[in-house]
Amino acid sequence: MVPSLMEFTNSPNSDPQPSIQTVIDEIHKENPNFSHLIQQFYHPMQSRLDPSLESIWVYTALTFRSRNHPKDDIFDRISAAKDLFQLLSSCSAPCGGAKSAALLAPVVRLVHDVVLELFKRDLGSKKEKKTLKEVKSLVGVILGFINVCCCDRDSGLIDSGSGWSFSGLSCVWLNRNEGVGDLLPLVSEEVIGGVKERDGDVSYLAGVVIAEVFLLKMCLNCKGGTSREELETELRTWAVGSFTGFQSVYLFEVLLRMLLEKTLPVTSLVSSEDEVLLRKVLYDVIILVEYSFLDPKKAIHITAEHMKIIAMRRLILAHEAVKYFRERGDQRRSISYTTAFSSSQFYSQIVKWVKSQIPVEDSSVKSKGSSPKALIKWLLNLERQGFLVFGDSILKYHSPDMSEPPASKLDSDEMDDGPSFYIDNKRLDDYTDDERVNEYISTAFLTAANTMTSVEKRGKKWKGENSESEEESSLSDEDSE
Image 1 (cartoon, rainbow, N blue to C red):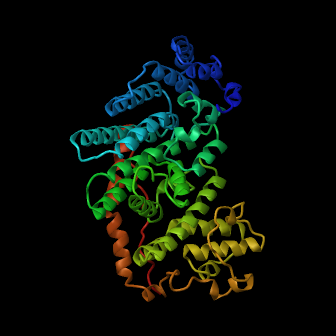
Image 2: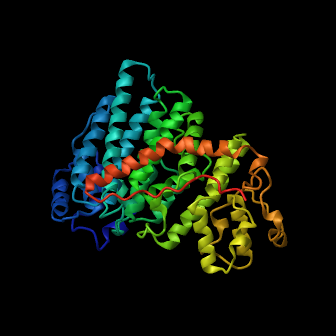
């Protein structure tokens, strides 16, 4: 059943053009005729210096459908994906970065479907190897295009809501019995729910599409034939560099939301073992590295309330990641996460937000512990006292097993995590040599840091901007008292 199109067709920001329902009706005919509709959508699109996303999407959907690409051979389907990518990228040339990235959703869907079919085959044959190479090349081109879009500092992946309904507009790319989730196959139901809630937010949709390409690239690399250790290092280095290059708060938010779910939405493409590897890499990339574009002072296009919601999810993910690796016996990684968190600017920012609303002393914060779990408990205790620091209960974003002692006990030393969780300078030696922890953090991201620097310089060179050094925070432990 076709979703409602009323929100889009009645939008005051829409270009004067035929009803979208007319387009949908024609698409679903047995022998559709798009020629007259193509012209009717072409002129409004060309008449504007910055065409609306809806006019571009409808025009390109009609044009692409009229070309009747063969679908029998997998190479034909790759060719069709390339054709659609060229069509969309050329039509979005006058647009800002967010809109150009968001428009690529149907291209990513086509590529995903090709990869899905390809991974079911014997990748050892000559034809399949050639196909895999073609797909990897196309994904690389798409990522390069997105990187240039994200370097468009004038838009900065920002676009005001245009008033359109994504649920309705997506119908021009879908068959009769398909829904929005079919157009976004590499994101979770929770993320799709976010898209529906934020209908018209082009920047968020751009972040979702970039996240899909991001995961698609990682899945393709899993079929490269390298050792697991080399693959993990390669993916980690690439991911950190990409985060820094894209500079997208929305990409960070989307991947963060997906990591808070039990499985990543890649299980149709890779094995459960590969899914675990990708999760480890993304945990490292999100928790161990501090990105300057997440600094509230720099993310001026994001509301303070939005940044606090992201911060809450980020805090909970840090706790879940520590728990995840401890349960699997990876003590070194869990210690690294806790150490990195407690010495991070992110931890300091949360405490700063608290202190801006509640008169607390630094010593009272530190006495409760600086691990993610200790900080969550401290915030929950403040909620019991009537202080909603983040405007909403942390329980809204967090529902793991956090059995709480009575509030009176939360004010005592029992608030601190036990030896298996809490890491600070006094108790780090209960686990292992702190040099080994620092070695893990430093070695894992030495190459990544170099990549981050080179990507940023390259992006600014493209746009002719003055270089600005990326702020990198040290992940080393504080000096022992």
